[in-house]
Amino acid sequence: MKTKPNLSFSKLWNISFGFFGVQIAYALQSANISRIFATLGADPHDLSFFWILPPLMGMLVQPIVGLFSDKTWTRFGRRIPYLFVGALVAVIVMCLLPNAGSLGLTVGAAMIFGLIALMFLDTSINMAMQPFKMMVGDLVNEEQKAKAYSIQSFLCNAGSIVGYIFPLLFTVIGIKNIAPEGQVPDSVIWSFYVGAAILILCVIYTMANVKEMPPEEFAQYQIKDDAQDGSKGTTAPKGAWAVFFQVGVVQFFCWAAFLYMWTYTNGSIAETVWNTKDTASEAYQNAGNWVGVIFAVQAVGSVLWAIVLPQFKNTKLAYAVSLIIGAVGFAMVPYCTNQYMLFVPYFLIGCAWAAMLAMPFTFVTNAFEGSSRMGTVLGLFNCTICLPQIVAAATGGLVMKLVDSSQPNMFVVAAIFLVIATACVFIIKEKKK
Image 1 (cartoon, rainbow, N blue to C red):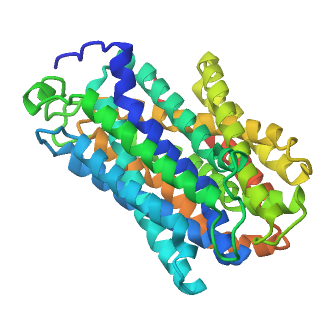
Image 2 (image 1 turned 120 degrees about the vertical axis):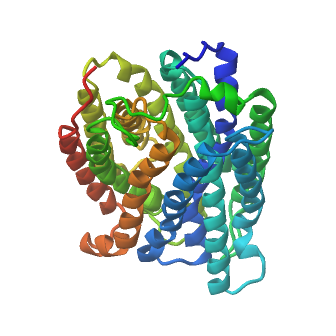
């Protein structure tokens, strides 16, 4: 088996640049879905149900993309066809979703239209997202993978910041941030339009500047049919699946906590900072804009903490410390009654987010090192991200009733989940170097 050559910084950058645009789309979805459906007339107890579709589609789509792209060879590349189709569909749906309340439909019909659009949006985002992870695995050698994923993480968080601040930015330049009851403000609609344009331009850039290996060349860098331990038909080293499921337990509590953050931030800060529960009010829409700002602060915290993480000599300790810091941040949110005070807890939450983006993949890819089915493995691993969100979304209304039907109290629940996740980190049996 040959070793892949080192790539220049520009080539590593080009492989992941399209991820910047994809993440803008994902950030717009994360920060505005609850706002959009609440504006359309959804009951706060039902908001979590609208968050079932995104992880459900991710759980279905990413394993399929991983499996089929492992076997795909075209003149356009191996992963790039999936990237382009996913991005194209995402652009179309991003122009439709925020207009759900402006088509003259009844409240119920607008909700259904929005749900269908959301389903297609998340399907397409997942389809466009997975190829970037796979292209790093295909084209980058082991020595440079950490650097390549660091570039991808930077672009991911940079895209998030841009997507999060768009509604506030457009409000500042004079685009209306309020709309008739049941309609989404123009500031949000134009955020989706501009995000869609940036997405397709970034993806076209990556397609024009990245050339995937033809099958004959790619085969030279792959382990042959036999497993590392010499057994026939084995696609994973010994103990790899145990690590997979151990990390999955941690993932369950982490992603359930963040699902509650995405679902209830808008309503929570509208109540505690802007003193309103009226989704048609200007105060509620101002709170919606501020969601983008504090999510951007979270992304900044993630970028800065990602620089600190490599300084830890013990990977599990780095993971655990990050999660407990995030738990403190979640616990602080209900007690922040000033919009600027929210910068502190969301910065701390960003520390947990940085670890969640890197540590699980480090444990799993190290455990499966040498496997010929890495694309399929990472596609399946995405289920440990999606399944906890589905469970949390399906039970969110019930949990909310248990905490006095209070959206701010859902952040206390999220904090407890991250404390449990911290304890579960220490059950992971890290692969010995």
